[in-house]
Every structure is written in C-alpha cells, then in structure tokens.
Length: 85
Image (cartoon, rainbow, N blue to C red; front, top):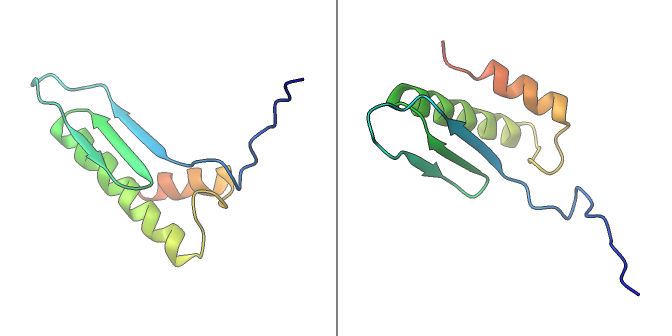
C-alpha cells in the first residue's frame, strides 16, 4: 500500500524565484544563491529584484528568521519594504 506523506514546512526545500518578463535586449540574466534565483528581466528590473531579495534575506537573518520559519505575510511585507525607490 502506497501512502503519500505531506511535506511539512520544516522539511520542505525553500527557495524564492524572481522572474523578469520585460527583457527586450536579448541578454539572458541569471542571478542565484542558496535561497533564491532571479531569472530574466531588463537590466533595471533584474537589478531591482536582486537588491530587493538580498535586502530581504538580510532582514530575515537580522530577525532570526529563515525562509522556512517566516510567515508568508511577514515575508511579503519585507519584500515590499525592500523594493528600491
């Protein structure tokens, strides 16, 4: 008998993915780290997404949080706060 065991949040792999869709210059932009990947976008969009996620990861660390244990609404608020002007 097969049994499907749900993956708990504590055991799940966590990874943020940013996808930029506004690239018109033909460049393939990819930035990655252990906990995030950013793919595509114009130079400006890719840079903005990278800065946003890097600052958010720093905030998580400073607050003793990780992607695994942060609440979704808290992560959303951090990402929104860290979007460059």
